[in-house]
Length: 457
Image (cartoon, rainbow, N blue to C red; front, side):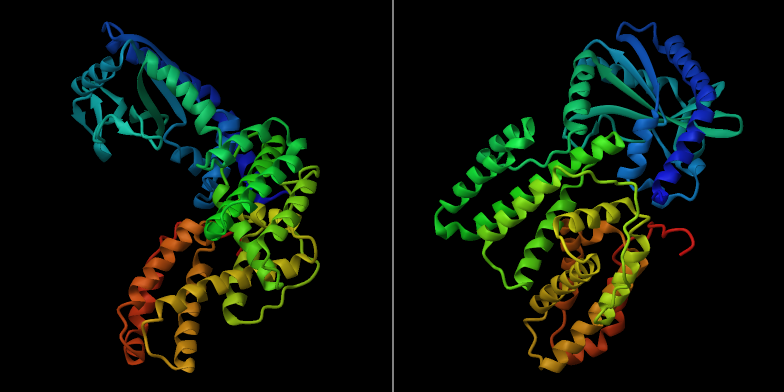
């Protein structure tokens, strides 16, 4: 049985294929328009266009959780700002601004939604409100303008870029080598060099990782915590590289889930602690051996996760959160992949491992709550009451938006920090009683709820 996301992707790709002839006509018309009005300038060299490919669209839908935000393939295509891409090429970097200024002089008339169009040509408009050039995530500048083509009673979005020859060249490097490369890079040169060699030949993984392990163990004992962080980062890197290649082999593209593997490693080590094993070196080797075996196995990322029995939860928080995860585990690609990795690494009963993860999440929250309440003079019963109350609010919040992002380290830490800031304002137990509703509203009001639950739930 296929995951719903892949059915949704296939429906969207079918719609794109059906629209392709008309999209091609739009591209030709746009190309001719910009050549006619800007091609005479010395700075203008050429214009190229492209329509989003099936592969790129599939990748974007899964990576950005697009399928969770829209109910139909039509809404997905209508939402894409770069369904059509245009690129005007000019000679030099300074010519990029010159070409942009020509756009400002040409598209003078303001239409709806802040779009500007040329007098007598309302079917083509540009959003010229954004500051240009824009700063990309990689820190580099780019002239990138959103546009709309009006035809057949519909709006077709396109993205217009203005690039010099040198930036065209850099853009290809950035897109193919950096943007499409999600390998988890560590800053330490020792690890970085080893990881580069590992990519060449995964069959050498045992020997290379033993070199790393001996290196970490030989470090000064005063750096123990730093060593533990490095070991966890290394394991996360290894898991990420193995699975990113498996996803690419099966689905045909790369995805970035390094934050996911960080949380998985944190859970795996917490689980070792639950079992009474606190030897980082021993656990490191055990996990490495297990991960190395997984590298040789085939994994089907399109299949459901099945449990052979119903999980039995031990507390209200675990029940509410656990049941919500179960609802999305075979709908949300991120959750599905998350538990497939855990179940592959941790042999044994899937239900037990699932329950342990929910308990891990609960304990992680409790640990932070205890720190946030440490400034108060509370009895054990008062502390328990406050913790249970806040756990209930958080469980309710997660139930409204059970998105994987909010259990991963960065988002989780930001979330907990907001709760911590609220609790610091309490002076005693009576303050808590007076502030219960305000506290509840503050916690529930922290996050947006764009997340779309699986259909039928």
